[in-house]
Amino acid sequence: MELLEIAKLPTAENSAIHLNPLDNVAIARVPLSAGAKLRVDGVPIDVLDAIPAGHKIAVARIQPGEVIHRYGQTIGRAKQLIEPGKHVHTHNVSFEELSFHYEFPSGEIPYPAPPKNTATFLGYKREDGRVGTRNYIAVVAASNCAAHTAELIAGSFDDERLPPHVDGVVAFPHGEGCGHTIGPDTDQLQRTLTGVLAHPNVSAAVILGLGCEVNQIDHYLGPNAARTSRLVGMTLQSSGGTRGAIEAARREIHKLMEQASGEERTEVPVSKITLGLNCGGSDSFSGITANPALGICCDLLAALGGTAVLAETTEIFGAEHLLVGRARNRQVAERLLGFVKGYKQYLVRFGGSFDDNPSPGNKEGGLTNILEKSLGAVAKAGSSPMMDAVDYAERINSPGFVFMNTPGYDPVSLTGLAAGGCNLIAFTTGRGSAIGFPSIPVMKIASNGTTYRRMQDNMDINAGAIADGEKSIQAVGHEIFDFMLRVASGEKTCSERLGHKEFVPWRIGPVL
Image (cartoon, rainbow, N blue to C red; front, side, top):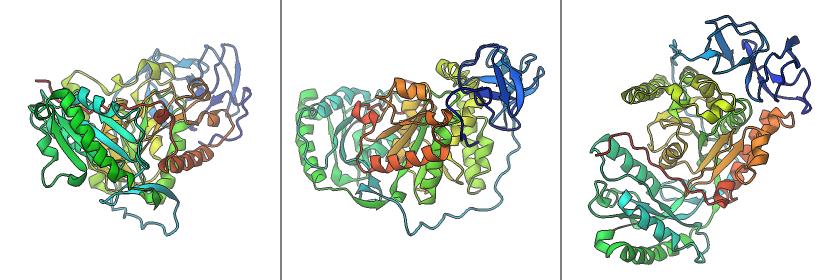
């Protein structure tokens, strides 16, 4: 639904948003008082409860056990009789896992030919054909035992004047790398750190270990390792401890900086952008404003040969059937469903459920359960065909819309997107989220004007202007696209100016 010509001043006609003719609920655009009068699609409704902005109001009588629809899709069943005008939320909506009859693609969607005329940005060309939007020196800890020293090394350059074309020295500390089971968990950590070390936004890197951990630095330094000429390995045990490692690393980094300083931004096509998509602190407006506007940006990017990567497997649950119908072929669709099935098994091992995902803040913002949250979350990916589905931190090689298997937990999800090669990240939020990444610009898009105004230090774009009737979804989508090009060319995001550098790999197995 395109929200156009909605007057900012609340009236009976514009105070609730009815998203789909099939929906038996509408969304309160503004706080509604009991006794207020509404007119939804020409039908008068008396508001019976006080309803916060973003929350649902019944627009028809809903019988006990009857399906509740939003976006024209199922989001739950009524626990009791719900009269028109009543507040619809966790107190009267039951959650149930849905079974879908999937409509698998019968053929194959070919990769489109890149357009001859395309938008451009200024980026750093890399030897492997990818392009960086930043030019960092990375100090990556191989394990928790080297994490503090990695931070000290990077921090020692904070007050130094950097040479031209070098954005900084950034640390990647974490709590993993030892006490791991040998197998999928260690493999995933190594895939993640390899992706960080060889990232297009990283000119050169140091891999730092203690020396005796499970995750040995030799894994990253072999003849088949990425960027051997731009990667230095060292351990605390062989460098004389923490102080010795700091001194040795600083000497190496000064040499690496000389190389990085010779790299300059050049004009490159927008097809070299790999945009990671994430949402955090979502509210009910996320699926109405910020997410569909970001979807417009992603469709524009895909049409120009770029890549948009939807993540968070926990937040497509209940909407995966919509993605299956967009898959390039059956194999891609089956891999997506395999990730959902595997995640369900993963949760069962710990007695969890997909519906554990909505946080208290999500619910306060009007999201009743994971089904409703997912249906709004998938809008970030627009309407382009799903060309590939990849595992956590797996290298992204496909143009167009791609799905990555990650948790919904924001810092872990961003880490997977980064390791896969995303050189920009777009992050939508309704409640307000303060997060970034050490080497990647994270663009923050607020779903409502209140959050944007309350957290202007953190928010780059106000998609709440859509619900306020000031801008269309299309207009904000183009605004995000234009901002993306500026950020890719060097403009700083709020998260960069604030120094956010969250990095959390995903541990999937037990601690030994």
